[in-house]
Image (cartoon, rainbow, N blue to C red; front, side, top):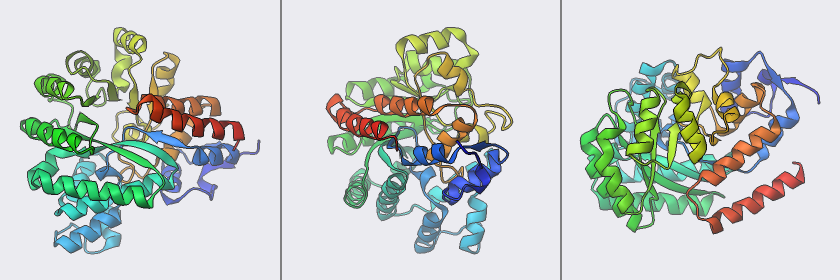
Length: 366
């Protein structure tokens, strides 16, 4: 098949074009594969709603809520919003979350999240919501009402399905009981399916959250945990053995410990891998191939995700394109997409509906 330079492939949207130009402009893949990756029905299980919200949305919220930003115009704010390095990312994330001042802001953010996922043909998503922060600002009932409104609008206006997993900011461990209570209330209303823990990994080991996770499990919540991103294999061991996590967010540092790799392989615990996030945050050097190749070769249960796509100038399609240009074949990329669907917390009947759609696409050769 003919080859095209990625920097010149005009079918990319702005996010994809910017990402591919910045990170891998020197390489090329076939336009047929690009089109197929964009068209395929997708699932995603590791994405933060706040980190998937575009700069423009936050800017208009700030204006409406009279929140002072470190920018005098939308263009300046967009420039500030672009990823530079990890400390700057924390600045951007903190500033963006401060724009969320009313329950209606959350309703709008969630509805727009549905739109973003639908535009990428991401048919099903399990997304994180930063509960340690929102439960500081609002009473549970009013924010749950807003989340319900955002979900209703998203489902009515966009052709995709989203389930929510609120997470604890591990650098605010005192918030964990408040977050658990909030999540249980949301589960009773059919708004939430699980509990996660994210944020600053180093210095905040999984063991800090043992009792909260045990109670979450007793309450019937699905259990996930960020681990093995900034911290090493010991963080994953803690998530698996102490928190009993059903999935691991990131998990790339498992390769540091052959015994852990063997346990993850035997148990087939899904790993929520986000390549561009790892490159941007310096977990993996940008001139190095992503370790997901070694993880796949070790027969680990890997999935592909975009983490904070608006803040990393990426998209789920771009994540697959990254792997394509690093040598992954269409068959391997399709299998990773199938893995993601199988790793969801949908029941078998719900998965079957998507499996049929996936199979029709595969047979169509689109």
